[in-house]
Length: 136
Image (cartoon, rainbow, N blue to C red; front, side, top):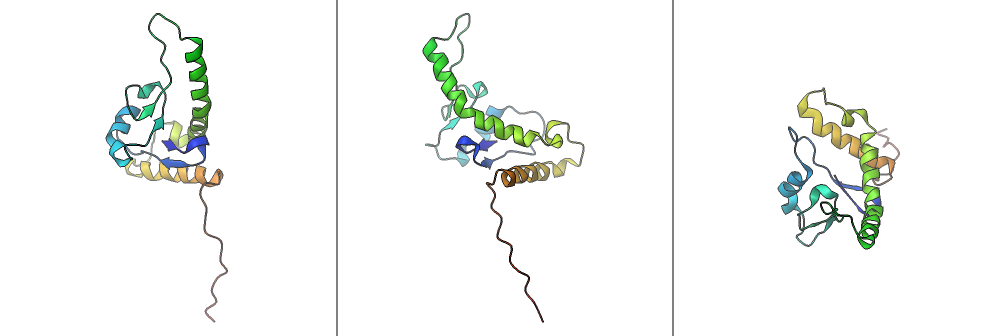
């Protein structure tokens, strides 16, 4: 899931991929859809990807410095909005559990849920209601 800064809107969702796939694999498969100058923020699962800024990983058998911890804290303060948006999608039980309907409908269900979340956060603007046209 790609979210705008501060969790203002859901930009893109990859749904309907069969089987388990890591986030970094999905990103690498879809990275050509984004501008090469576009930068992203991700968690430690994205370490090694040049387009994605990640927190500083703790070195083996050592601790992070105070500056590194401070940097990670600032980084996570910006990313928390993404986690909140993911949570607002996962509130729907069908996202949390095994999908038991026809697998061909999975993507449609997930995108519908994302649409409902966008509506709830007022990122989706519906056309204004117009009065019905009288034919007589």
